[in-house]
Image 1 (cartoon, one colour):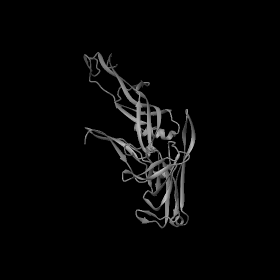
Image 2 (cartoon, helix red, strand yellow):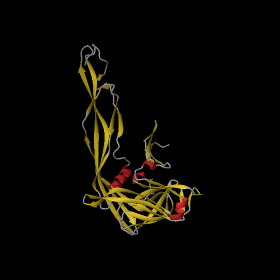
Image 3 (cartoon, one colour):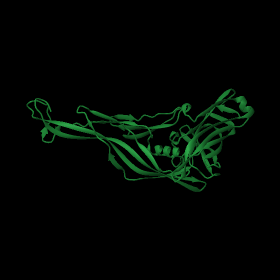
Image 4 (cartoon, one colour):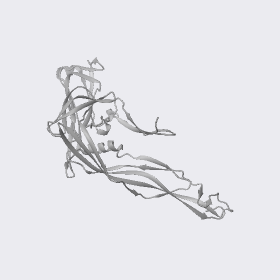
Amino acid sequence: MVLGTYKIDITKSGYTFGSTNAEVTANGATVSSVILNALAVIEERVEEVVSAESITTSGATIESSVDAELSTGGGVTETKTTVVSASIPPATVITINDVVQTGNISLAVTPMEINDVPPPPEGEMPMGAAIFEPVDAKFDKPVDVKLPVEIKLPAGLSIPVKKFEGGEWKEVGTATIDESGLGADAEVTEFGEIAVQPDVSVDEVASAPVASQGESTEIAADQLVVEEELTDTVEITNLPDGVTEEYALSLIEKMKGITLGESRKAQMEIPTVSKAVGKVAAPLSPEQPEAWVQKCFVFVVNTVTTESITLNIELGGTTLSFTIEFTYTQQSLETDCTQIWVGHSQGGV
């Protein structure tokens, strides 16, 4: 295997999508940890058990909703409610793994954040996504679904609907943006992880990084390794009109490959020097009037960049552009060591 950094995508039935990095060096490979969230513990997930008999008689509807902060321009936001739903018409035959269902069926809908959605093909970007369960369910009649839209789009626009299956996205229909501009109505004949996912180009701009040193702490003379908790942070400075704050933060996390709000441990070995300029370090003894001493300090470096991400959404021959501006602060750990010679007597320094 060629040395370098590799991205690993992770999927597991009943869990959100995840990805991690593997660093391959001459000494082996180091894999960053990743946490997959079980769908059953996601707060917005709604589950309902219905019988095939009741679906035959009257159909079934299941709905979930989540509040989000939508920008209205000028730094002002308002609370919006994202609705996700599925309505199965009466007399619908449901099959799971090609078996017709005749008993009870557990239906569930779960709105998804963009950083929990599997990576789209190049040139596409999910504008909203949800998981409809059972993920292997198929229907002999179209099921009406309402999908969330995280960027307010013009009502009446058509937007492609994609399903993630077998490690790739496939087109399963077309949705229409509703009157609110924040939902998309579609018909599907199978459940699973479904997203409204148009063609999108992304423009990224970043300023030159500016680094500043935090307070330093002296390290004990016998300490060989230093460990600190570091946290990378993002502050949105301009949230464009019609974009939810949750979507913007999720997009930044996805584009930057970070998880906001979570700290990470950084370790650094303390450098040691066997000799100093002009003199050889030696054990303390009455015969050695001077001894070399290394003093080290550790400090956190905050590197700040001012950045922007512009989404250019291609829909119906029209390009809609949204620019999110933010500052990204990345923390790193550094040490500063100095060498000094000190006089001593009787083995003391």
